[in-house]
Image 1 (cartoon, helix red, strand yellow):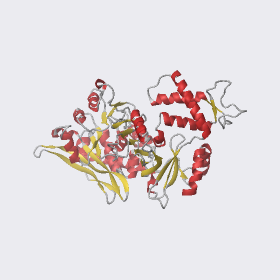
Image 2 (cartoon, helix red, strand yellow; image 1 turned 135 degrees about the vertical axis):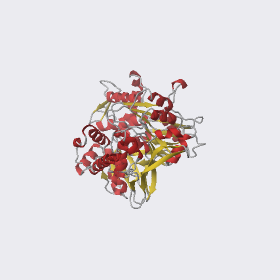
Image 3 (cartoon, one colour; image 1 turned 120 degrees about the vertical axis):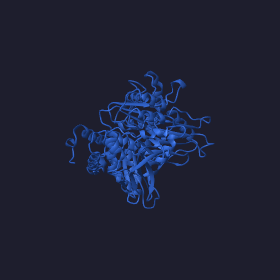
Image 4 (tube, one colour; image 1 turned 180 degrees about the horizontal axis):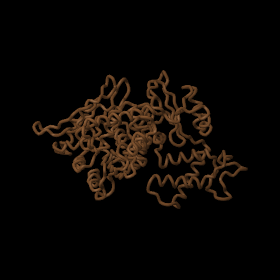
Amino acid sequence: MTQMQPDEVQQLLQKSPHLKKYVEQARQHVGNPVFYSVLPYNLRNEPYPNVIYPARGAVFVHAYRTADMNEIIYRAIEPKLTKIEKQKHDKLLKTIVKKAPEKKSVSTDDELRAVLKELIDELIIVDERAKGLEEKKKTLFNRSVQTEKIRATSLQKRDIEYAIIKNLIGGGPLEPFMRDPYLEDIHLIPGEHVHLIHKIFGMIKTNVEINADDAPLFARKISEKMESPVSEGQPIADGVLPDGSRGNVIYSKDISIKGPSMTIRKFTETPISITQLIKWGTLSAGIGAYLWLCIQYGRSFFMCGETASGKTTTLNASLPFIPPNKKVYTAEETPELHVPHVVWQQLLTKTTGPEEGRVDLFDLLKAALRSRPDYIVPGEVRGAEGNIVFQAMQTGHPCMTTFHASDITKVIQRFTGDPINVPKTFMDNLDFVMIQLSIEQKGKKIRRCISLEEIEGYNRETDSIMARRAFDWNPVEDRHIFRANRNSFILEEKIAKNAGYADTTEIYDEYDRRKHILERMVEEDIMDYYEVVQFIWTFYREGEKGLPISI
């Protein structure tokens, strides 16, 4: 049950006074919010949500909309230091600065976080009677032992630690958003409320605003975390934040008229499962079964679409279909792929430092051919490295990646033209192209696989690539249709023949079986990514009899 029970809510409010204070004030304006430990995805259909849910640590989120409001409001609820706590915080911070050189040197945010927590534990003496900074008859700074030490209650310690981590190595005013697992993107424009792309509620306005005076310093701090400092001479920066999120900063006011602006694409710790995508309607159980067979039998494909269409999400959801005993090689500029396999060679490009030490995606893909992987998964193909992907396919390595294109014609045009220049005769190494788009329908943004095209080969007479529509999407009925049922080139010619089927049409029986398994998983609400992984791998090892549900 994701909705919290009344006794659970009371316990939570007792442990979090800042949340309790907020709720007491909010009730006067929007009524009693509903508390959730995990947000159900069907809340996206709720016209007037009024929910509170936890982010990481002491941060909570209130999302609500009333009948007289045009949009949903997102309020970050985080600890605020009282005057006494602020005094303790300032004293502690001075002592940390003095004592930090005594600790081991650090080179990453994680190492700095560990050192800060170590110093905080050493310098704060937890005393539940310690309410004020100093009293005449009570010594809150343990002078008999060490004058630097501070007495504080456990709650004061928690709030002070949150403030120090937030401001020194966290996201500053964006820290609550960095802790929220339900966010996809953070959009900051100086002088405007920060807006978010929420996984449940879509575009949503927050109560956080960064003014034009503070924005330049904040933009420089974020860009330094990405190891790509911005300046008037280098006004645009792209990079990866320490938590894996992808950042883009546009610094110069000559370019960004309202002042330094930025977009942060959140790193997702737990991928979305294939069953969740089926439940949402992004793709069908039939498409899932098709992907399952194609991936198991080593076919190569591209997941295509425009920016923010969910290409990487769908690719991640598909990776558990790779049999568990295979070696997977990933090559990315930003760490977005999640591979559950034990033998996972995860490699990233290096674009900073001396020229001779830099490694691009082209270099990583060349190295992949010498690493003997069973599957090669580039995070995204943009340029000349696409040629190496096709070379890998020709040597028998199944490859799967994402690519920016809205239909198969554009995929072929871009790959056979500059700067990739793959010969048309090589295109039949690619087995199929799946197109996924973000679509506005009935006032809501939805992501849908709109087509899946099989590539049959190169026609010399017409100098063209022959393709066959396997699946398409009916927008009126919002359902996917298997056009290639009993007529699939890939299933019959590329899979069934190699798998030893005497009658290639028998592959559709296996397709129907996988489709039914996925439908049953959705019916049983098996949505957690890692539970889905274990379910699929159990099927590989033990067949249907080993599955924990009836098929």
